[in-house]
Image 1 (cartoon, protein in one colour):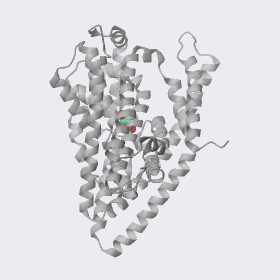
Image 2 (cartoon, protein in one colour):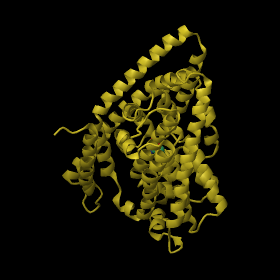
Image 3 (cartoon, helix red, strand yellow):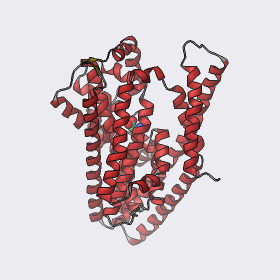
Image 4 (cartoon, helix red, strand yellow):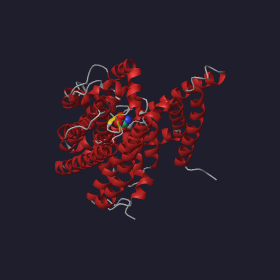
Length: 441
Ligand code: ASP
């Protein structure tokens, strides 16, 4: 029997959870100090980390040429600025609608289940865990988040950061995705207006770069089972199980809300807005979902998402190159939902009460706003959460966020899958509205 690539990736993931748990069982038991096996475990984790980073680096390597060439070609082919404005309006409408629905799901779940409270008071086990590690937690967060970007200015700066100081800066690092998109849009729009001769030769060149980038993405995905195995095994090996238990209710509320968005809201949107069969779309996006889940990075997954949309879902380059790269940083349903739950949870743990309606509305607005600015990299939400709690002046919030860090990775995996899937649904819905024949059944 010959396994298909996605089946191999799934098997790699299952094997990784088994291997990771075996290492974890020895690493986390304090009663069992450094044994031979533990040392081996630590070495294995280092090896997994190395291999996982190599896989991520390969994916990131292809982002710049792929995004630049496909956005330029996509825009230049939109045929005039009318098409551009129409697609832009639809895309933004979709982003705001789905992020808002996600936030409302998060808001409802955290208010119904109140994971930070127990019998109307702050959950004691959580409070005790924070109290005994307060400084360490606050320290970890300070190191992770750094000085910059802890207040709302960081959010407003987004437009300034979008414009690269020189064009090479836009190609510079993955954190600069918005500059890259901005430059690609300017070049793509410019191409519509220059002479036939100039447009023809440049378009031919960029089309070639685009084709080549997709081919290289295919090659990289041949290594996906190994990369995914390493990433997931490392994460499982390092999971802090005792803390997962203390935060069990919080974990379930976040995971439940994300799954609701992924398996109920998104299929409804696909069916109602796009008239598309959701099962077929899930199947078409299988590799992108698995990659998002293992890498926890929408940006690193972008090449895989683009390829899956174009090759499996039949969405044109014109639509996917417009909706996806922008969506990978701007449209983050899972992140917005997560920020909302995390901030209200922190307030429950710290104050023992519910937030006022006004405060909750602020959380909703800021979750929407900051999710737009969050980069598509692992744990990026934490920065946004720090911004929101600072804005609401919740005391000692840093220590609680430090505790949340302990369970962040598995939740990050899930919210990244939600982020990526929502982008892909947006592309399909918009492609349908533009008259393309995608996944109709
Ligand atoms: N890791 C997420 C992503 O790349 C962002 C986050 O919520 O931390 O989409």
